[in-house]
Image 1 (tube, rainbow, N blue to C red):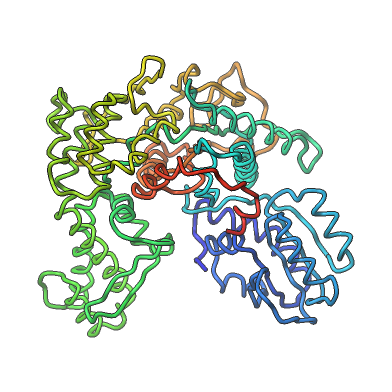
Image 2: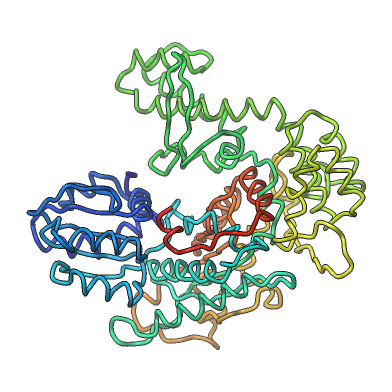
Length: 592
């Protein structure tokens, strides 16, 4: 399990769990067992570690669905999603022969009456506490959350899906628990799109569910809107950012290296298999993850040299084998050096890919995405930019990415052109990689009746950038415009108004001022929450931190169903035309 983060969503979630589950159970001094389902296992692992639970007198953590030995003298805490599968497993623990002395039951979200009554009629005498604690999202990072549901992409965008409505409903419930955990009652807005309605539908659902959730607070009063804004957009609003090769450390690593479940696997110099977790317990990762790879490759050797200088080690080129020697000579610095070794190795792996082919791809990708070259000269003939990529021996996925950027740059292409591209890339049997973007509302074939308007971009010509990293995700413009209260209400209709002329600083105009009821309501600063239907990229996550850092008075939090990588998204897009789909149930999402 992870260590508790010192800040951000993870800390807030852990505090909420401590204030509810742990506080209830602390009333008795007995050691307890904690029983989790797959989702709550991920949730707890994201925000605390085993030693944190031991401190709270929880001695054993068990899997709800695995066979367990009875421990009759111990009380059991059940933390689970409100599904029939979980409730049936709980009932089986107590129905004929109780496994534990008693049960403290906590649901992540609202438990339907039929499940609650089923549980009550079967084993009410064993239940000491039964509560809903409103956390059905995963805190991925300090300012990033997900619904832990990659399958939502297909259920929302596949033309064969029968479960779009149910999926959006579940997402709305998860967003409400996020707002409740943050103690926010935000104004809700969505990105208007004449071709797609999912953002509007989700905005309506969230707004109605928030109104019901906050109808009465603990003191019996209706909760007022807080200084927060929730913006909902669809993945198709920026198809470029998920496809480009990014050169910032985190985004680049997850694109080019096979990192599964945030675990980086590599071989050490002696040939042994090593693995490292890339999460917020690793402070060097937190420090470097949003930096350009050029800076990372420079900084890590510098840090190692500082350590060796402090221990009077001979100077020289920093390599992995040098580090291994230093670690033998300096056992007290082993932890610091191990940390550096991991990142030196990961940065080296990234740079190998960069030197082999990514560097050659990046210039063409950036020119197509931005519409001009590094000198600011407009790209007059995008086909001339694309051709070298198609004629070179790049991988199938890399060529598809370049073709897509060409098509996005022109807001669609002709049937004839598309067929030529498909033959060039040799994907005659896999044309869905390109054609299925239309399911996201992204124009692929130019037609008279398909309306598409490119967003007006902020002028960033004065900002310092690397030549191969000139593109800025559209979401960063949205964040900055929202914070400065510049979002056009024709493009971003209000599903519900914010309590003030929202400018991201918590300021309230005299015309709209409401008297704050408590000191809490008067807090300076505000929150901007952005939810992307259909997945969010690492570069978009980075933008949330950059804007928060620049503005200071507004915290930006971003989330989605899941986090995207370019290849993963391409495979998901291709799979959209597979069908017919099996019907989705909530249990499948919660217990996958």
